[in-house]
Structure formats: C-alpha cells, structure tokens
Image 1 (tube, rainbow, N blue to C red):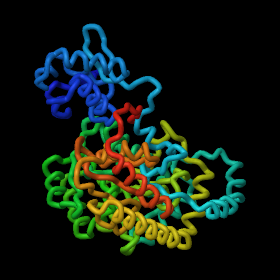
Image 2: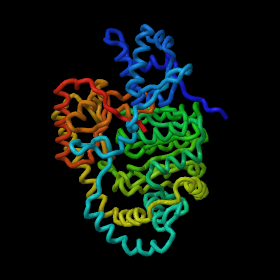
Image 3: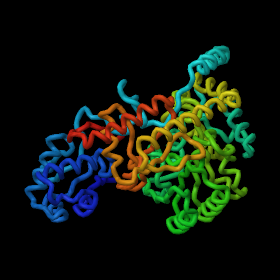
Length: 481
C-alpha cells in the first residue's frame, strides 16, 4: 500500500489565516501566522503547503508575498522544499514538540499553571514506602511481569467500584500506566483509522491527541457553561454513528462540570442504539468538593448497555501523577484482549508503584478528606485573587475537580499566555482543549492545585503582564508532540 502524504489546499489554509490587509510587511506576518498554525497543531507536520500561486489567489495577495513568506519559513525551519514536489511543513531542529514541553516541569522562576495535578505530601509518601517494603521484598523473588496488574491491586480497585454501587470482579480490572495508557490501549484494540469518535468540546488535550494520532475522525459535541446538551449528543450518536465515544462526566476537564443522572441514562441509551462503545474517564471522580461523590457512570447502564461501557480511572489527580497508576474496568473478556494488546509495548507496570498504590488506596478514607479540604481552600484563594485583579473575567465555581474554566470576555488567551511567561507564569490558553481548531480563544484553564499563596502570586504576575501591554514580538520555540 502506498503512503499518502497530507496536503493543505489554498482555501483550507486561507480559512485559518488572519486578514493580512494593512499588515506590513505582509510576507513576514504570513510566515509567522503559518508557523503559529504548525506549532498549534492546526496544520499538520510534514503536510504539503499549497502552491504559491494557489495560496496567493486564495488570500488575495501577490505571488511574491507568498514566495517571500515560504522563504522565511524555510529559513526558520518551519518548512522544507523538494525540487519539483512543493513545500512541506516542518519543525526547527533542536525544537521539542509542544506536547512534550507541556509535560515538562516549568523553569525554576515560573509558576506552573499548565498542569492540573496535585503533589503528594512527603510524609504520606514516606509512610507508604515504609509499608510496602515487606511486600516488595516478597515480589523481588518473582520475575515481576504481570500485564493484568498485581492481583491484590486489581482486587482493591474492583472492591472500590463495588462499594460505589457498581459490582465488579477483579477479572474486570486492568491496571495500566495511567489513564492515558488505558485510553491508548482501547483505541488500539477497538478502533481503526478512519473510524469516528465522539468527543466533548472542550476536552482533555492528551486524550484528543491520542485520538488524532490513531487517525480517527472526531465528532465534537459541546460542553457549555450550562453543561451537556443531551439532545445534541443523541443526534450525533444517531446521525454520525461513531464507533467510540470518549466522555468525562465526572468533574469534566476543563470545565469542572458534573453530568446529571438523567443525562447519563439518556446518553447510555442513545449509545446502545447506535452500537457505540462508551469510554468514560472518571479520573476526577474522587474530587467532589461541594456535592456527594458520584456513583460510577456505568451504574446507570441496563444489562444490555453495560457490555459496551469502558470505565477509565487513575491516581494522578486524586493522589500523585508520579505513581503512573491507572486502570480500566470492562468485561473480563475485553480486559483479557486489552492485556494481550498491551504486551506488544509494555509487559506490565512497576511493581513498586502498584504496591504504593495499594497502600494509598487502602488509606484513601483517611487521606482524601484532607486533600479535598486543601483543594477547597486553594479554589477559594484563586477565585478571590481573580475577582480582585480581573473583575471582568467570569467563571462558574465547579462542584469538583482541579481547575476553573475562566472566560476572559475576548479572544486574548493565547496572547496573555505569551505575556504571562515573561512574568514567570506558565499557563495554557483554552484553544489547547478544543476539539475543533480556532475555538476557546477567550478561555483559560486555571488549576488550583498549588498552595494558596503561590496562586495569589501567579494571579498578581498575570495582572502585571496585562498591565505591561503587548510583549515585544519574539519567536519562542515550542513543540507539539
């Protein structure tokens, strides 16, 4: 089978570019706009750009303007050319994709608001490490591989589901290296390139990236400040008949919303009618701040609906991302098939991490209330600081989760994120959470996982960045991986 390389037509690229009227020199603005589209992932890497004459006609500019812009893209490493074949998008050498940069720690001088993930109190970790030492010594005499996960941890996770109202056997649990790993396994087993996947808009960026990298077609349904429009979801399931649907009904990331029970029943019924697999991410389910902890989504499923519901969980948001412990709940047969899929790339998770997870889950009833109280205090401190420094910004206080989804009132989030970095705050604009390019430019996701005094300082720095006005034009190397 021959490989078909992607290409962008002049009309498609023109629709993504700003109006160049009155901008001088136009070729430089055009070059910077195209490189920004590449960095934001809105134009794919290694995609063929339109011919110079075609793009000039689509934009209503002269061909020399496009020629000069392409030359500048090649000079800065954002394009390459092949004789007789055209011009292709690229990244500068020594540049890391932005999706990799996003996961790295912020510089020492920066307050990191790009990642919504709590730390683990050192005394809790010390105590857990001490508790696992005898069990680790016993496991050290074994090969240490188990693609399903340690039996005792699977049993603990199954018992947690049962206690929350969803009867579960250990055979229905697969322990993974985080929720992202679980989603990737599901996509690899159940979906083929070109299949449709229904996703929320906005949604978790890493999940959207995994879906795109699997060459799946997204069907976006909106999550507004008022929550999910179930009629739109039902219509999308009925008309698009997606093979999979990825949902975050528990303190949705990034909005923090909780899907009502009645809506869950309707979504389950509509997915069943469409024959759609539901992948339900409950990573944030434990972080109920103002409401009772919700029952698992699959509790609402009728027996004939439950077989196509896959529930994903993780300790990254409720405990610590450094553990790299997640899981999925599905039928025992599907879990076996997913474990077989896993062996191709990962023979099993870290035994030490799984033993630590076992201890922390066993102690969750004692540890979680203090964690929730810290999050409530930090959420209040962040809301108070934003009200003081940005009275025109609006948000709805989420009933749980880890972040505020803030409306700035105008599409300046990306620009503000650039300015804020110069003042020592790393934050991402709402466009990163978009299933469709070009939306949520008026939004910021601001986590409240850092100590209250650090959050106040971060908001103060952001206010200083806004007061300083536009930052000087500069090219910041960013990777999108």
